[in-house]
Length: 327
Image (cartoon, rainbow, N blue to C red; front, side, top):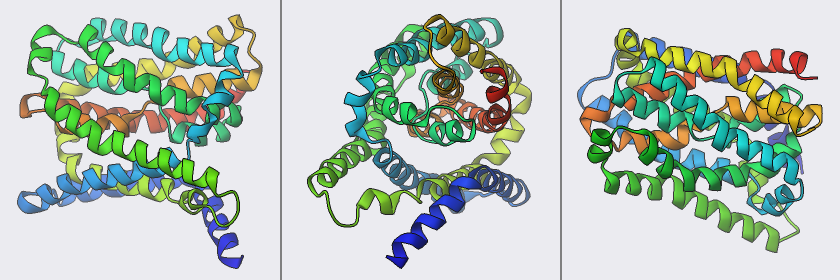
């Protein structure tokens, strides 16, 4: 009992200070990566390490998304309709428009499409809680958002990317990365959920895993920054168009979510949830897909990393701003 209490206390402390943990990880990674840039075997090892780290992170994250709550999400059809409409209709239209205006490079546009067309399934819930949104609704909708983006991302990539980029996409490598890093952890989490529901008593495995997402995500951020800090900072001159897109995106989507939620007569806390969902993207789910791209398309990886940094700052601001403007 004491061990369970200790784990719960650790998890609560981590969740309370998770933003600080993430910022420390990013800062430490940038400092290490810029002062002692990894090269040779060390860089190869970091690139390899990110794969199992992402697989474990996604498995742990999926175990906390309560896949059995899909039926509960269907119970609130108006909220679910707004979530799906904002994330899979209005957001794609916004992203397409922003890239048409600001991004001329089709490779950079590919990175934008990969990261902005998939709603977040992990820290969006935590930031929703910090921003006084409707966390139960967020938890219930997350499995459906995950399944919808898995089905729709290939459609968006086919529709939005340039024809020459589509021809260069390594479909077999991308499918392999999807299966190994996303589908298998999702299947393992689903089997874990089934096992938990069949064993209603005793210590629950998912509760033991509940304190892992924050430190695991911090480790992933640290490793990514160490391995890619020189690339991110070195490419800033060429990345400014996508940085503009990401900043405009962060500034625009809460208002889109708010107006859509008001039209649907959603309550205040539900509208805040939609805003946090629209503002947070699933960068760590699409990162392994980007890592599987050939060398000519590798700038998409840097685009995704840049987006995750801008998003983190934006979500921190959201926790203060959204409760004040959506009320």
